[in-house]
Image (spheres, rainbow, N blue to C red):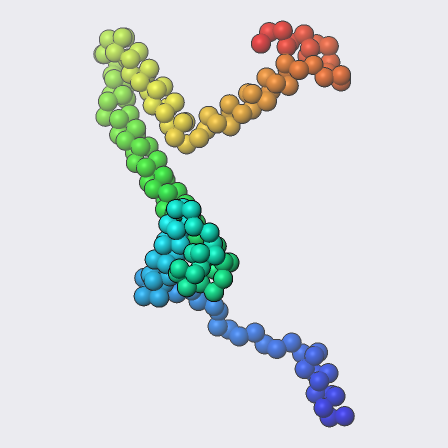
Length: 172
């Protein structure tokens, strides 16, 4: 009976979880660098047309799933690097546009003694800068998508579409 009671107690009480968390290796540890190099080689082999089976044989993975995971990890790393590079380029271009605005455009806009054609050119340049900023930040993509949807909706008459809305589709 003593054994049965101890079994019931162990089932009823959950074991306390270990406070140690799984820690990943440092990105610069020797084993991690070797693994990243191996993943890079696996991706190069895959891009050259090798199958996962042959990659696993050449690089010493246990089976083809190891080669697949290595290629997948290398691709994720490439995507992360390109995303970071894209963000750096975008922020650099935004800083350049702001510097251009501060040094060249706004002094002409604010100067009341400047001729009107100079002020007009400065305002035009400011609008061009704003358009470029919108394109860099992707603000126009949503507007274009919404405009296309509404145009399509107005252009195709639906059975439940009100008559006044159908008449608007003539004025595209």
